[in-house]
Image 1: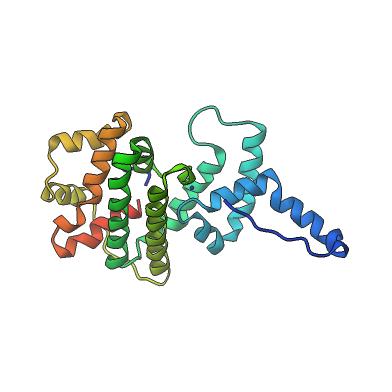
Image 2: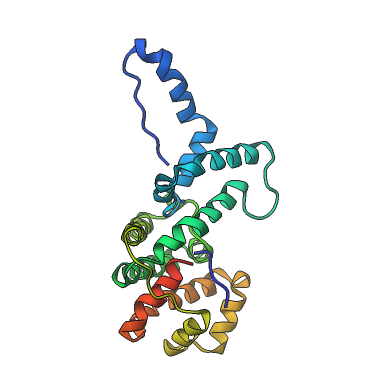
Length: 233
């Protein structure tokens, strides 16, 4: 079974002409292409919180943005997104693994609401969410944007919970397979998971929803561990 990998606004004011000598360079940095791209990265799910916790990654992100602008990546994730992936692996996932059952189960419920809407309103965005996240949530319809914000709120709540949390139960892949079977997954479902990248928008969205709807179908003791496995992947 393959995992799915599990997206800008800046405000500034210039008040006094006499302050321009020192505000000018700050404004340039704030509105430079690099800083605008960095602001967009901060809006990716949980990335802003992780950067706030680990500001030492900012220089690496800025360098990745500049290098990408000078020599764009022709295949695979861009350099900035590669750094974000490392950030998620090194800092975000470990924190989410400490989140309590209630917060990760709530995050899964928020995902269900979003996916149900996107399944009808925007199957392409639904598939994008299933693969790793929606890069341009501002292009969703109004309800999609509202539900996407609800997912972010729930994920941020789980992250904050995990900051002060203790290590929680994490199931193995084999145990997750057993949980999926308990929830009604059959061999064709597992075959689709194995070949997720090849699925159509509609089928991948249907499968995403089926996974996100698993927690209520499990015994109470398994709901948190399963949800944690999904949100902290």
